Length: 207
Length: 222
Image (spheres, rainbow over the protein chains, first blue to last red):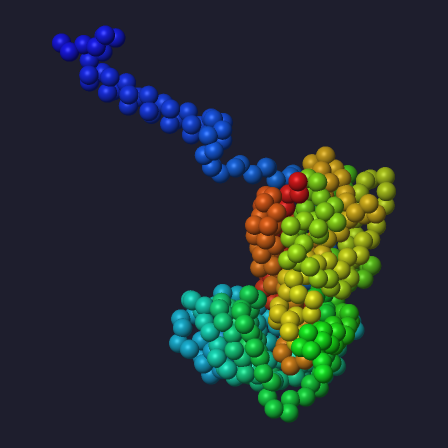
């Protein structure tokens, strides 16, 4: 037998060496020695605080403005057939990721009423707009008129557009607003020649 | 002859001048507006346009809790301060620090990433948060330590004359703030940490874009 002075064979020494490396690795991974050796690891975030308790409410849910199925279907058809949106998307596959009603606020205490539908349209990949004619609805916060916005068609250029806010006026049966969502880059928008604002200027309304 | 810098400054001043703080209230989803309690502290789960508690007088859903060692100034002067370095219009939070004191109002104009979005020479959009506490600028309880709470949203083309102005996308703004917090302060944050009973499904109310999942984020202050 080929025995060393310690009494181990060559094969036993190899097994011991492998075991030693394994145990050392486990120790480094599982104990604070890792930090001492400067090995980076994910720090456990402190636990979040206890959750609050909500006061029970006696307020009964009132019927909210909701789009009926026929209205929603019609609004989607208007969006699907809108040429400005198609031009903006330039053939990029897209989907409607959010949808809901577009209503007035009920300025001065008047009851709010349905204007149409709102959609967030998301292209599958960020798109670029190059002097694309897009409709915009300059909202009149005073809501003094039945159609509480001024229409404008701006030429819009933008990069990295990941979503578009699309508003459909169901009374007029058309898309009245297509706006790049938050986070779009290098957005430049040019109004048509001679444009004049006729609704009150936008004011920070909870902005 | 004016320099380019002088012209830019004039444009900025003009832009700021057109951003008058005229405001119109939004309406919380029916049944959402309520008080949240944590130990002896309490607060409303929306902020308000004026100092009147009413579901048709709300601004945005509360979606932020800064905790552990927070105060209004400590949050605003943290490492996110240089990013959120502008102020907006004032809104109101209603809260109670201990059971021995009554409810109080706090006003805050918050911090935003652009002074007047959509104005000449300014970015078209801004992320904006407001935070609230009582007289000593922070609340305290054994669970949350020193804490403040708040709301957040985007302001888009707020100061533009020819582009539509939109306000909202709160859920998206909340995610950005949590990400900014972790990246810039190095402190921890839990996105959508706890249910705050103020879910606002996507809808547009005038120019107010509601979109909140009803869960608030917890951002730890060291």
